[in-house]
Amino acid sequence: MTRRHWSSEDGSRVEIIDLGSEVLRVPVGRWHRLLGDLLSHDDHAAFVLTLDNDPNLATT
Image (cartoon, rainbow, N blue to C red; front, side, top):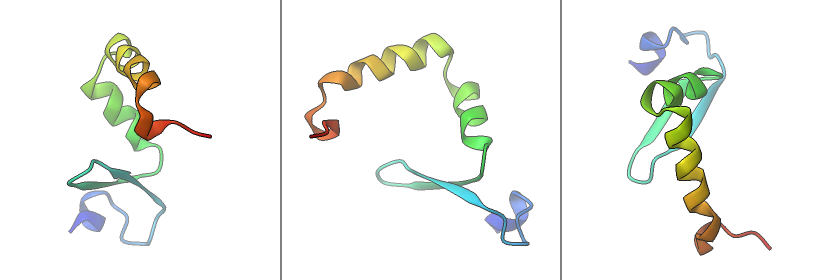
């Protein structure tokens, strides 16, 4: 069903976004456009700043 919705019946490349309890499958390049529709640039930038102190995202 999702292949038909996104017109990817031919096996087109997709991006997988792990939302924790759900997984979102979208055609390559659409994720950024979807994010832009959901959050303003300022809201997204503010969220990214909150990730600085998240120990689960720290790299070594």
